[in-house]
Image (cartoon, rainbow, N blue to C red; front, top):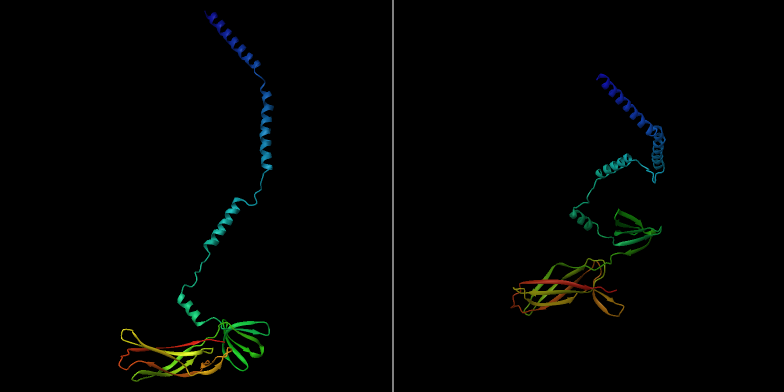
Amino acid sequence: MIRLKLSIFILAVSIFQFGCGGKKNADPDPQIETPVQTEITNIFTDSVTVVQSNKFFKLEQSMADIQKEVEILRNKVMNYGYNPPDSDYTTQLKALIDNPPPAHKISLENGSIIEGTIEKDNVEYLLVNTEVGLLTLNKSEILGIEDLILPTPELVFIGHGQEEAFESFRLFSGKVMNQGNRRGDFVRVIYSLWGENTQLLGSDSTFIEGSQIIYKSGIVTDSVLEPNQSAKFNLKVAIPDSISVTYVTRDVRWEMFD
């Protein structure tokens, strides 16, 4: 019995050794796979190397440099100071009133042109008010003066005048003066009489007793008032003394001719 078991064990060991030996001889030599694996590895390695060495663009700055420049720009924007313009329109309007536009354009011998308003005209020099202040100009250096703002007459009444009531009319008398820089032509004074309910009771006009002038057309008049001159007037407004006059208005008008 023991011999039978021993024979079976020896037979099993022999079969096992024979089976393992046959399998070892049937499998391919593992050294054959080594070159194939090395070749594949070399292919991938070479491919990666080619892609890294042949880039289609080149970065001039790194991401860190770009972020640094953005931060610097952000700080500049935050530190920018905005100063709104002066909103005091009253001050600006007062400046425009105190500094009216220039009235004269003065040409000098050296080619300079000065715009301002002549404040004083002496024999030897002119005092001109400009944007930079008062300038004194010798008349010997002046080539010409051009008016930027055309002068106009400015007729005003001197005082309240006199009023006399008669049976059929009222007589008004007084004086007017030209305070402008130009002659006033055909200067006329108008008086109007009004009732209690703003009803016009009567009105009339008359020309002043001014200087005489002959125009280019040949017309002659004596109702001209030169600058800084005054003239008298007398006006009758027909109205019965039985009518009650509440108030009186007056006006002066003129024309401008060359």
